[in-house]
Amino acid sequence: MIQFNVQDISEYRGQLMGIATLLVIFGHSVGNGVAMPRWMESLCGLSSVGVDIFLLVSGLGLWYSLTSLNGNNVQQGVRCWYLRRYKRILIPYLIIIGFHYTLSVLHGMPISQALFELSTLSYWVNHQGAWFIAMLIPVYALTPLHYRICNKVKSPVLYSSLLIAFMVVISALNYPVESTGCQMVIDNVKQVLYHLPSFLIGFMLAPFAKTGKKISYFWMSILPLALVAIMKAVWILAGIFGVTFRCGMLSDF
Image 1 (cartoon, rainbow, N blue to C red):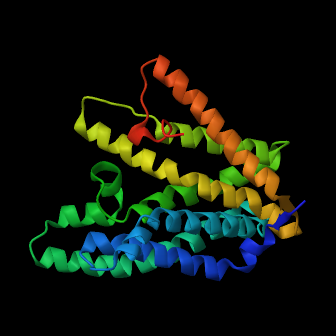
Image 2 (image 1 turned 180 degrees about the vertical axis):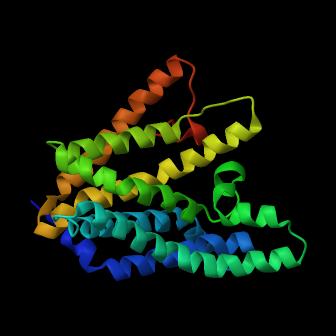
């Protein structure tokens, strides 16, 4: 039976990051008025795939970094881990975006608004600002807890798979509310949950990559189909109880 070596993801991490970067750039080009051939515009629809590749590789890397903390002083190690991780994302972010908002303030933007958007809180409330950074801040905060749970449960793969299925279903459901502000917050949370399974898959595959284990292409095909079947069943039940799915995500299957 043909098998896939999970270690290849770690080995070709740089190449995957490069592909993800190109996909994200393509995805933002059309929205910013860049003229390009029709065939290239079709690639812009794959920008979401670039985000998922980033998250998958990040999940793999964070698992490796957390395994290095296993020792006598784990609490101090986790604090250092938080410091390193947040420095890696926040220092470049603050330098680049901070310069942007400095210019915006000089051109009339209220300082309070600039600080609010710089904090990434504006994404959750108004869908404005660097949403990827806004997502990574809580994800990094919860990752050590997720790592600890994976080490305690009997089957980390089953636990992660159930968590992935839960996030996919929750992100697909519609939650109509009367308040426009609340609806915006709900939709923004759903957007993050829609992408988090990629991170969890990378985190789940990391132990296999470290030990050089291989996964059958058969199971790699069956598991997504099983997930779709579960989602389809939930979609049918949701229809019975009057709950809808956004954008017809599941009704197309």
